[in-house]
Image 1: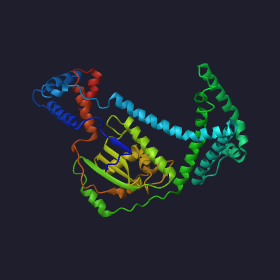
Image 2: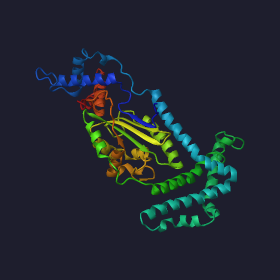
Image 3: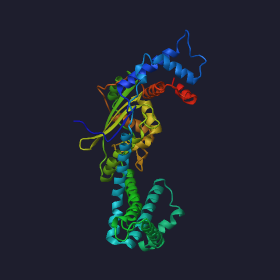
Length: 409
């Protein structure tokens, strides 16, 4: 049975295997042509003339240079990717806004404002207090006002915030009436009934989630000394570094808990949409070594599976992740049992280099069989070949474009 990935990344997205092979052959042909030792016509040519001369000599043997290439990511596909990301963010925002909306309609504006103000001050102070106690610091006088508000009745906090929000609601209501909306009769266009109560409720819901999550994180158990099976490491090592690429497989148990389950589900889905929309140029952000990365939930979401194909060795691959993508890696993998301690879901975790590498090594499984479609090509070389071929498809280049194109040679 195939499991749909929760997060995935395809390196060199939108480039078919036949195109990768053709452009790799073109790169070798270009190098051979430029390396001619006898009657070399390319000496002392500027970049534009070199491009034109090189294209004239190759186009006869490489007929597909005159063909219009297939677009890597179409306009419709790009709009669809961003649309799914926006829809996911909108649904998440709506869910988080529901407590504020419900409380407002049940208890009215005054109790809503007073409760939001009091809870916001109380939760913010508790988060600060938790952070200070963790660092063995004393609570400073900067939070005296918040401390005072949390110790008083909700009405005291409302004295400061109630007039401001009422004026804001009144101003928005007037603006909507100026633009023709009948705010007095249409419920959905009344900001006091729909828009601002939900947004205002986020000032309680979001800090509350952060406080709840931080308490869970402080009580999580982590493997500071991960148990690594020497025989498994030997088996993995014997199957690595045969070609330019390597493969990694990992299976870990997912930590229990209602809040973490919801965050993992929404976080993985959002991260997957984000990577799909932004990593469309062949690279995973600033990382240039990932051919493929794939997370999936197994066994009724009790296990988390990770597969990846990458260039060079396993150690350098994880070092690249630790240095350049530890935030995303912590979000995607931090739900695993024994993962290094995280902070606010995305901090620390994978940035704790030694602990993370030991944990990842202990979670690895032996991959008995995997296939590389182009074992001698790296992610960066494939993109280099792509840019070279893209330049040669054009009959002429400006001097600046030709000089930039020439750097890939």
